[in-house]
Length: 352
Ligand code: FES
Image (cartoon, rainbow, N blue to C red):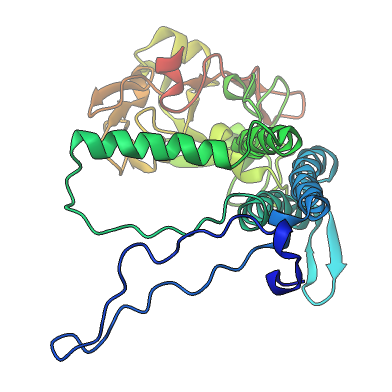
């Protein structure tokens, strides 16, 4: 229905849309200002039932946004991260990612669509001409802007259309929750994980190169060997996390050359087991000097004396390397007598 079909008495009062005198074409100015075209009334301006329909549409869109946000949160909680579904034409996709994308997209789209529909059908459609003016705004202009803002707020009927206002506030309040929920993707809290490694009493030392359990006779004086705990397999999904804490350096030093009393007690016949993870920023230590029993971290050259409790003798590392207490089991294999007594690696020390 166009404004031409509407009885004259139902039309709102016609506004002046020319805003000043129209230009007149002459020799100097051949392009005369044609002025604005005649104003077309919207159906919602003249039919309250149409306005109500638009209001319900806007409210429906805002409500849809709220439901989609709730769906987003429910999907995040309920759908397992490894669930795969087939969706034509995307193929096999993660069910969780698909659900999060669809629900968040719907929530944002519905807010935008609701706002656009509201503006196009219910807010004032008065056509205005804004005369050009200097960029700087004098006080009276700013006062006028504030007046216009208040006028705009009044004309948007925010106070009168309570259904729209309330559903819009509901949608705008709920949609940021999606971002809050996503914070959980930063990962679970570490809890006690940083304080413990895969070592525990009775776990045999496995040679990292041969994957065989180690006997004392396998460790030659002056050599450096790397070991991992029994039961830690390279194909385990958590292998990298676990070996990053549990990697071990094994050296054999003449017991008389071991200066630190506790290090000697925690060793077995001069075989010492130290964490391989540098206490500076966590590089794996691998350079061993058998004459001095010093190990050097290749990252920033921190140097540790394995004959003296792996104390730092040079470089930025702030702490000695943790030592693992070891012994020999009934079958003659080297085994751990406990987990490390202190956290391995860097930074955690400073956090306490
Ligand atoms: S990580 Fe070892 S010295 Fe920096």
